[in-house]
Amino acid sequence: MSSALPPIAKAAERLLLEVELGVRGFPRYHKYTLGSEIRGQAMSVVRLTHRAWRDRARQVEWTSKLAFAIDDLKLSLQLGKQVQAFKSFRQFELIAGLAVDLGRQCGGWSKHLKGQNARTQASAQRPQILSSQAASHEARL
Image (cartoon, rainbow, N blue to C red; front, side, top):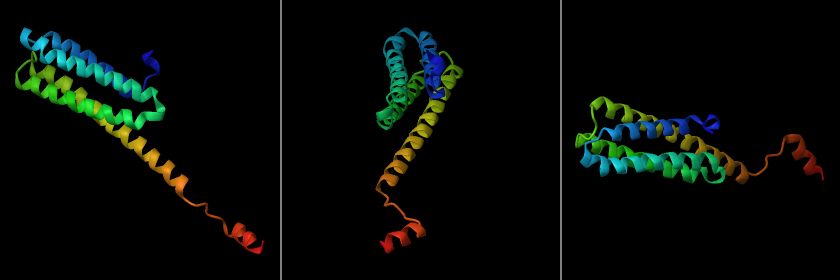
């Protein structure tokens, strides 16, 4: 199934995997509070990524929601670092790096989609330009 997925979806799945592995090592208190929240947010990011990829008609909307979901996840990861929920700084750094990379990919995808929409709307609104031969032919009629 994942062989036909774009790199952003694969990156989201990798982030989810690392989050699952990271939360396993949280102390008991954080595992069932903050860890549960982070796991849920990572799953939401994966779901939004798949929706954005599959629902072509609403891709701009889905990528916008995806960007917010990634930002929310990054905030939760930062909180996890502050309360020292991660086993090590290295583990936090790995997961945070994956989240930052995913955010960059989402931003690039969003800009690409918005650029496509702007070109499509501009070409639909622009009047047809006639060549000089066609214009002179029209003038003679």
